[in-house]
Image (cartoon, rainbow, N blue to C red; front, side):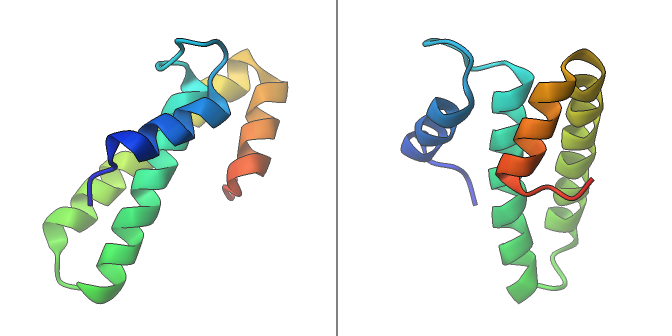
Length: 89
């Protein structure tokens, strides 16, 4: 259920602004989306795992706040990342 280092590096390379960028909102949103996808798949087979369900809700809310921030600060970047990740908003 945890993203491996190689998977994180692969995701970050697709969304980073600069060579050493790891904390921009775009990168954080992409990493959260990957984690949300993994937890959603886990919950499809383990329906009664309520701790994972709560963790999923926390991640979804964190991603939502980051998307709101990005929409306020950089409208074009927001549109691009929502389209690229296929997020419903």
